[in-house]
Image (cartoon, rainbow, N blue to C red; front, side):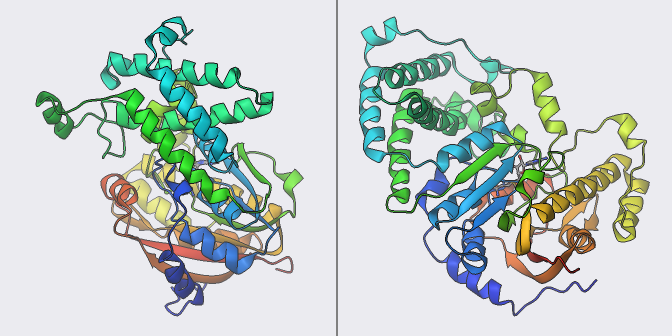
Length: 434
Ligand SMILES: C[S@@+](CC[C@H](N)C(=O)[O-])C[C@H]1O[C@@H](n2cnc3c(N)ncnc32)[C@H](O)[C@@H]1O
């Protein structure tokens, strides 16, 4: 297989131009480690599809591809294993009536400071959270429960239809999720929740003041404005499902997708749910430690491996990949298992994308090489090897320098996975004649 980074890629030039454009505010709705820069889907959606076409992403995360598809008048079908991520991206792609949100905001703001109203409010129970007291101050928990109850009360008493009530409540709950990290005791600058030395110092100096109500009010005002991004755009069909892109059955979507734009998880890199566990506990997407472990185990690239699995010595169907796995096994058999499992799972995802694509449909993948125990794994090259064996043609591949100010991503990479700071952008095409 020919594998050279194309220095003269026309797509790279176009992408660099699109990166200069201002990104839509709605992308800032919720922090998410490993987010795609919006310029990537924007570039390729414009290049490879027209209005009314359907774009897909089997690792839809916080919905960057979904948002860009909506803004550009395309339909979208996405799958995401993390229920909270699927929820956030659903909210981010809903066309809310900004006036209605503003009216609800005003009502909620007043009620949150009305002591008599609050004393009569029926508040929910404190959600399950491992070490809750370590993560949240009692007043913050109390305020968050008041906020939740106020949202439910205000919207349930409104004149909206039942369906709209649910959808408007979703907006406010997604905003709660977006502020959880900031109102918790964890250091907001860290990828994984943790109470750092910096935070302890600030705390001891009396410089930390957590005010959940104030934070929430600022957040709803700001996020309401983001939905102006959807004023005057055509209505398209945006569907995001909470599903497993490795093991689910996608046959009902056969030949329906024009383009996939996706950034799959990196091998053993960011443990995505760990980064979001406080939000997931608070919004009750995880109700026990067992639920946490079961979800972690089905995530592509995860590092939760049972001893018996490691002893199985699994391999892929590709000798080039297996050489690396064997090399790694001599040093660390758990890591060897993780790498082998990653490519086995990704082959299933590649087959699913092939099935869902129309003929000549394209896949744009953003991925970078990983260093696992100092052994370089050419993830992009290996995924392409698998794609070519499954009916795809390689159209182009080029290097994309990671934006220095994408803090969350670089921190995540540098700290936890030793990933080289250059992304591969790879374009495959479904070729039925292959
Ligand atoms: C790099 S992130 C994608 C980020 C996304 N492009 C965005 O901009 O928000 C990879 C995503 O794959 C998801 N994922 C991992 N395993 C999965 C599986 N088996 N099925 C579906 N999604 C999965 C993770 O939860 C994570 O959100």
